[in-house]
Image (tube, rainbow, N blue to C red; front, side, top):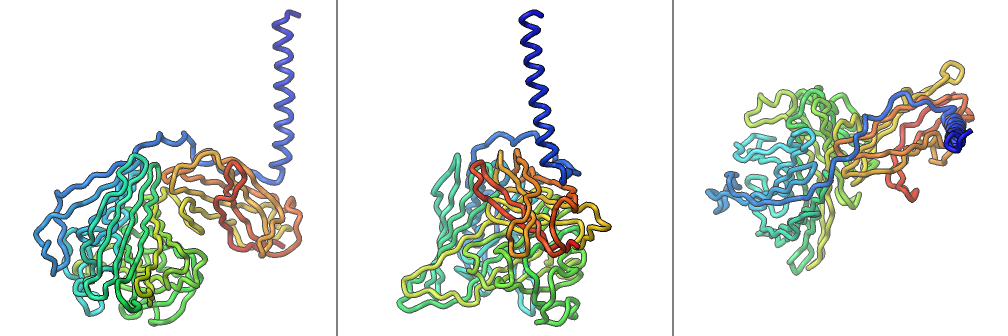
Amino acid sequence: MSRVNKIKSIVSGICFVVFTIFNIIGCETTENVKVISSPIKKVGLSPSEDISVIVRTDEYIMPVAELRTTKTYPEIIEIENKYIKISIVPHRGRILFDYIFKSTGSNEFHRNAKPMPILKNNDYVVEFGGYYLSLPWNPRDRQPYDLEYKLLHEGPDIVEVYMWGEHPDNKAVGEIWVTVERDSSLVQVKTKISSKREDALDIGFNDFTIIAAGGELTDNCSFVIPTYEVTIGRSIDNWMGIEGERVSWPQTWSNWSDFKHFGSFNVLVDNMSGPFSAVTNHDTGDTLIKLWKPNDFFDGIHIWSWGKDYKHTIGGEPTVNYENYKDSLSIPSNGSIDYVTYFYVLKDMQDVAMADTFFAGWIQTEKQYYEISSDSTLTIQSQLGSSRDYENIDLVVSLTDLEGNILNEIVSEPVTAVSPSQIYSRSWEINLNGLGIESGRYIFKLDILDSNSSLLFTTSSLSVSIK
């Protein structure tokens, strides 16, 4: 045998051994788990792009009634990166006016540069849309006063806009920092409220988000709130139920197709499993997620919509209003208090069970009750999305008891890439007999780990009964 043939023979033998070992390991790790659907085809993340900012004055936006700027064209700050294009209009009090998700082309906020007065709860208001605060506040139009601004960072990795304004009556000062980074759909809004008074300041405080996920709400939109209970507010002819009644969540009207008429409801933050809410438009593939920190800064969320018959209200729109509220915000003399709000959008998420500033996801079983005698397998489904570009992370699915103690690590696999426009979808079929557990109630937990095995994100299923 020639030397070349000997080398070929040795290489072939090594390859055979490696292939055999790989298959033995593969059989051991997948004996009780079968992948029944593959992730969306991965082509890798698109190249990184610089973030940019421009200031334009080519659009007229009507101000609140009393201001001297009625006939002026305000400065509109536009920030754009690979995933989003947002606008800020400080001279109209708009912390965010537009939030365009470039992957779908949708503006996630309702915006109206020239709104007309709308009759709501026996009071006329105007609604420009976007995201804004109740400080400084014009009580006549129920809209914010003007803010001043300064560009602190103008790219290429980060853009930061600083805004401020003082309430003319109570001497409360609002300061806002809006930050956007490259290769991310995350918008961070830091708010600081200070008092110039010699005595303590005690005020109510709200932030308002006028959401039109996917451009406008459609029949196939859903409201995502991590709670078990909501309180019914006002609704036309009490179609939602009696005002003040506590009902379980989700209700049928958590889908906008069943939100027939004007109605409202409230959610207490104490009854929420996480400080976030979301709206998903399944027709367009947009999911807008809003988070805040600290978790207990707000007391609750007041949510209302004109409903499906919005056209019967002059000025009504196919939107949902999320109003985070603080009944009493106490600030000592010359003191301050601050909190942070975050927004980001993901594409093609079916649901959101848990979210933080970098990841959102869910994991669930096909059923909530299984009998090993008649059910040989159990199917798990999950999705993971991220507000920024991530590569080379690890996904682990574990079986736990109701206290969260891990009983079995069922799945461990790499996630090559995940981003705002590229989610990770997966389904597994589990051999029930291979779990080696007694009858009882269990939870499936999904963990995301970095290359150092540090925990980045976790979410869990509802409890499952296995007998």
